[in-house]
Length: 286
Image (tube, rainbow, N blue to C red; front, side):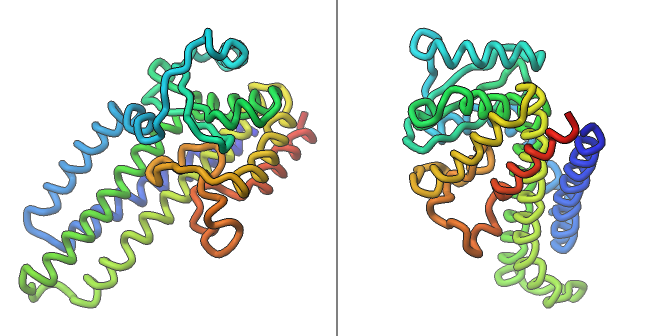
């Protein structure tokens, strides 16, 4: 599985480079002093994502601190799993939602937080909750939260630059050196390309976190069965989640809205059926 992990890391690096390349390419069409300005803006936004992404994600999800006295069993399971993973104990939060789900956030292991929904604790058996926790702690171990925060920031810059290009085209006069057709294509295609690259990053990180979490557990079955339960629950129980944080959750919180149709192609998560298949295939390597 080590080779698979390396491949995922390489794909993630290439996808992040692709987002950066989009910013340079779109910004270059504007020309002049705009490109250096956008580069500086991207750096500032990435610094903000590094330092404050956890606070933003928790606030957007209406998560509240959950004490050990209120959830001793949950704390016990997290403590055991962090010991296996070699991680410090994260902060623990509760999200007031009936849909079973969870996410991890934070810039690094020392400043990590795990947020679980009320539905996860009340609707799923303990072994499956442990599977979900192992997956989220794998995201912490693999530095995924920082990666996805950077991807979201770079994607936002691409969209913003494309919007500025649109304004410059329609309100800033024309430039003889600029190809109008190329500019229109960029305005339309750049945000779409940024979204697809972000989807690629998120989906690759989910597969890697599943494999890492299974190793923490010592058995892929608790996580595989948890994903099957999440598949059924997210289809029938809606969640009032913030779209900006959707990619953080272990399962697509909007599954009840777009289901399995064409809209599912733009889901931030890979198909749960494929994730379950890959987890159970790990048994053959055990």
